[in-house]
Length: 349
Image 1 (cartoon, rainbow, N blue to C red):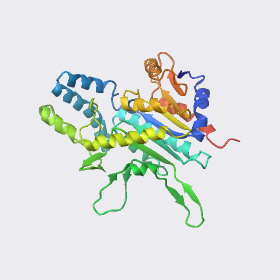
Image 2: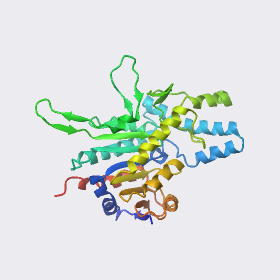
Image 3: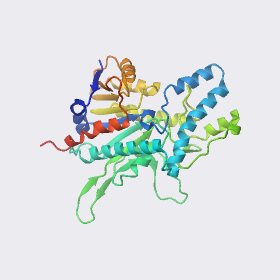
Image 4: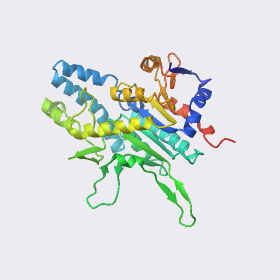
């Protein structure tokens, strides 16, 4: 049976340390984050996939396409402001701050791991299209963010995606003394694609640019459909795929997710994610047969706690961290809880 840990101000410090400290030191660290992490800048996805699927099943194709456009536009708008560096949007500023704190905590965890057996690497699996993690990582020049793109000198300026890059490590060496230090690294694996991805034949290229939204006069069905086709993302619909390229990439990244969970001594921390994606949910359930895997899922509120309990009933290696009735665990609270683990990350005395 999944264990529920209800957090209060009195026991949160002790509870989080008990659950996480050993795994943070001796395990392979993985995070699974969803749209809840990018709130309030980006609306929570919720049941958008089911709503769109219902419209298509009812043969309301144009309404389904319009709803899908509205969902993509709700993310593209804040992304445009993020790229432009808009400073007066409080929601975007709050979300950037939360992600910046989050990346900083991971960097400090990796930098202070005393074991030399495991790499100084954590992996973030994200279903979000937005660019908040990329923005936050700019604040940490000594941290390597591996987003899957091969950045090598070339004459055409192409920066191409390859999942093989997630299996590399980078070290720094001194120019006077013979030493080698591994650089802390975060693998960022965007399972549903990203707004920084661009389709080019059978390749995915890196490209960050603002994309203008359609006006009311431009919202004809064919224009909406063309707007959506330009994205290298897995769209929230029952079939999910629009191109063979995204189909192949999606399942390749899911395979990496599955393989990571099958390793020995794995910690998977889920935040802002409801496990509504059936593929990810089924992979996670199968992986929980691995007795050395521990899933720690953070529930936003008591309703989310009950939903997670129903999904993971009977699994002894699942911990659900939930707030008290009438309160919630937002990104800031999540970061506070992890920040309290840091004093014990160093080598035991």
